[in-house]
Image (cartoon, rainbow over all chains, first blue to last red):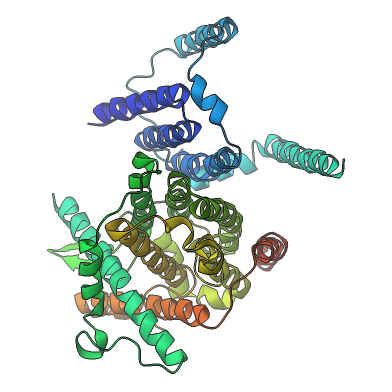
Length: 163
Length: 339
């Protein structure tokens, strides 16, 4: 049953992502991308990683895609709409490079069949414990990095508005 | 088999309670507003106008369903669905009464007892904005578009305050599970007393998230005709309407569970509910509904008391007042809970 569901949601994730990059209309792309995040979240649920699944919906499908849509709606994408999917040689090269790297990475993972994930790993308590003890320094470093990025954005946008 | 039947029963009870309340809330709103403004309110259909919601529903269904020629048809049809579904999803994690005993088994009155409970709520309340945004964009005319843009900015801003305002609660309960949060309030005191600032921020943000006055900027009729649902008619409009009232009930239920102790009564503890058996569960459900209804009345009261905010005032309130206050609240809670 779970195996079947994995293929259903995994297939949906791939399909929706394909539609995301092939839609001519950017709003449709955004819509398919929300679907893609939802399907990914469902795969996480099947792995019993409920926290990751919820955060996937909360942060990506909820917050980030609303910002994407906000920008898409503010800017009129009429010109982009006409062109549709273009394949430049450079894009194909980059895609093939990533595909090769990704294929190697997946190949190195080896077979994970038979190992059922520990259901305690995905709980908020377990993740918080690791995050605030073993990985507390990287966690704080990432938050400083994000803060720096936010401040940088504010500074840049202010300079533009004064000019 | 038993689990599936129990889940189905719980889903049917809770969604129907929500939808019937969503149907009758406009009647309550019209009656209360009439009382506030010294009018009579609906009184033609049935006793005290009680059949008015049913008459209105039939009217909505049988109106002509107009799809204007200039809209994006796919998204125009999908948008009302997006407006209703997220609120109903949130219902899944709201506990609505103490456990019942059915055929010798104890059944918790919550559809999905998730460990991530409260985060699940925020994940799906964040999706509620898509109905409005897609309606605004698909309608392809200026007032819905402005409503959609306003809605996305407003809901992102207030979602942050909403999320931060309850951090204090799960610091106290040391859990995200809704049942744990209710149990902690039954054993101790209600969160409205231990987290008054958190309650205030949550209540204000809930008004903004459900697009209710004084924050109904996305559909401000004096500026935007009807905002994002200007182009909608018949059953599609009804779905936006029902979605808004369902969201109001969901937030009222959340306030009840998070701040008002769920089904807790001051003079009863878990044991006295359990002693009453299934009547105790029914009493708990009734208490839960009454508390939620109190918060729904607050929605109506505020709507007919406060004028609408300007959009810059709305943004200032969200980012410069509520957000810092929510952070201060987390700090205070942290210091008070120091071991």
